[in-house]
Length: 602
Image (cartoon, rainbow, N blue to C red; front, top):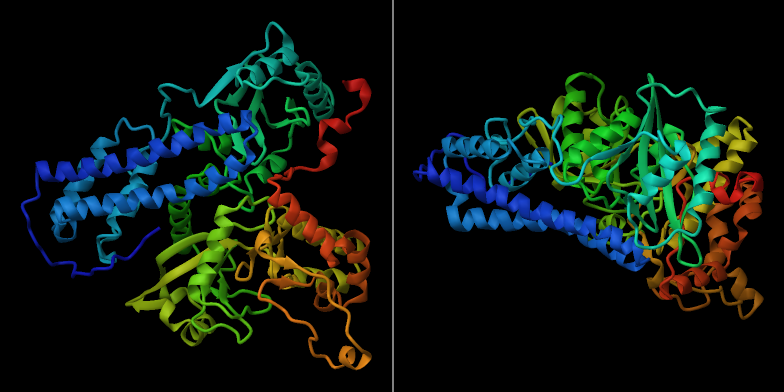
């Protein structure tokens, strides 16, 4: 992310403080020390994920994910303060900053996380320098140190298995045992057989073993929610077969293999930006990303870094990709299709699969909130246990775009609804604060299209998904607030995801009530509310009034989710959350789980 500093100075203003030589080296050292401190803390909490999993400390999992989000910004702020205090960094001249960068590059030559350290350098220096300095002479606009073939010193990126003595079943068992979980398995022999038969079914028999046959598995499990995931691939001749194996706890506290995912697209869903980030212990993160790219070639590196918990690196790579795309395309940013929101101004680039959201200066009359409240709501989404039903957002400050790429309608909307949110600097449009998300088809447009084309099956699927999204959000302690169809989107895999966060609340902060009966007929027919309503009072019986005007939609919704229209569902969900219960969420269909397997395959 490129950020403007609070203090500006002209590009050609030289304030020489004799920094060359040892002082430049000391600043470079301070920067690398700041990054190393950050990654040491980041890796420590990631490594502890194994212990939390072994102890079934699910509330600790959520707490760790929430706390980890602050790590990066805290270390950046510490380093900025150190540079200003010890080196008067805001008054360093141009040549000195260039030398600092060159010396910093030298410190990265044998580093295990050079790409992350370059991004950390940018995060610190862009809080000090004016954006006129955001060139490769002063910051890492382009990466400098290659991440290819960095070897881990202590923990291998992946382990290889050959299955020569005990065959595939033996290799599977050894793979699982090598993770050395302290908690015992309920029946690893049974689960190994399940995996073996699932592979046979998927491949329609076992292919002949080639001389180069091996199974490669990432050295650390990927931990998220209540599961550990083993990620790997089998290599046989010219063919590669990706797989992911979720490991869970049973009701007795023992471990078991829940399923094996063998389709690359299903494995890709584990890394969807609508889900919470993994905890994974990585000495060489670029090695993990490179391995994952080998089985998910269509997944951008930026998204993989984000899903591995390295959000700032993912954002850096995303913005580099966006700038590259702008250099090699010619379409313009236009207003996003769908019903215009009262809080967010949303535009998109048709050739790029994302939408760009800006908080307006003036909200709709019915919105009783301010900009700080909206930002806090978006932060909640980062911190809670996202279960595949909320789109992740990439948040940027002072993002620079070529002015000529904006359609006139977008510029008119910006000037009318968000004049304080941007500035024009020559041929550049600088947006002071922006959220970027994956583009989806708005659910209201999707439903209208399904009704218009008389596609009853797809319509029912979408309504069922919509209700499931609301249900799962509630179980994850999120009440959407505004549940209109327009605030949900349909992904390319047909999942319904929530993406309008300005009215979300924690479930535990809401009061779900039954609508009191009217005292008399005249009161009922008056159209006025006859009972007192507090700010966080919610009346689920009223949801159907504004959601289910269409008889077709109402019929389908009642079939699958009628219980959402009564307070009992919501109150029960609240009770579970308050009792410390953490729900199970499965990023794959129930029918793929091994407990559905036929008995003769046990």
